[in-house]
Length: 326
Image: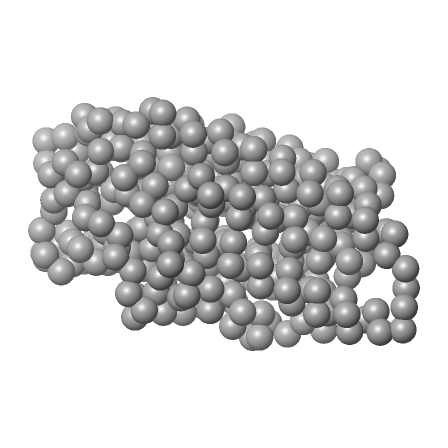
C-alpha cells in the first residue's frame, strides 16, 4: 500500500510539473499572438493529449523499455527513483535560476537509477536518444531561420489578418499534436507504471504502456491545469527573453518547433519541446540579424545539457546504489 501511494503521488506531481514546464511554454508562446484567449488554446492542447497516444506510444515505450532493463523485478522501483530524481533536479535547478529540461532529467534519472541498481543499461539506446535530442533544437533553429526569412517576403493583402490567424491555429495545432506524439508521452509512461503498481499493490517489473481514454483524459486535465497555473509567468518570460515582434514570428516559431519535434517522433526519441521552442524563436530572430538574438537563450539550451543530464544521471546512480538492498 505504501508503494502504491508513493507511485500515485509521484505520477500526479510529475504530470503537474510537466504542465508547468511544457504546457505553459506552449500556451505562453501562442498567447503572444494578438487576441489569443487561453481557454481555447488550452482546449486545443488538451485534445491531442487524449487522441494521439491511442494511435502511437512509441516514445512512451522508449522511457519504459529503451533506457534500461525495467523488466527486472526491481524495474518499477528503479523507474520510481528515476522520476523522483528528475523532479528533484528540475526543482533544484529552477530555484537557482539555472536552465533545465524535464525530459533530459528523466532520461538521466532512469538511466542512472538502472545503473546504480545493477540493471542492464542500454547505452546505445541512451546515446541515440541524446543524439536526436541534441539535434532537435538545431533543426528548430534552422527551420525558424528559414521560416523567418520567408515570412518577411509575404506581401500584405486585404484579408491578411484573418488568413494569418487561421495559419496560427493550424501551426499551433500541429505543435500540440507533435508534443502529444513525442515529449508529452513521458507523462503516459510515468502514469502507466504507477497505475500498474497501484492495481497490483506490489513492486515488480514494469509492464507495457497501456493507454486508455480515461487515463489519457485525466493526464490531459492535470497537465492543462498545471499549464494554466504558470502561463502568465512563462508568457512574461517569453516577452522579456525572446524577440517576438510580429504575429508572423509566433507562427514561424510554432511551425519550426512542430517540425523538429515531429521529426524526432519517427525515431521514437523523446526531445524537449521547450528547447525546440526556444531554438525556433532564436532562429526567427536571427533571420532579421544577429543583433536581434538574445544569445543567453542559446547558451541556456547548452547549459541545460551541462547541468541537468549529468546531475540527474549521477543522482539516479547514487540513489540506485543506496536502494540495492531493497
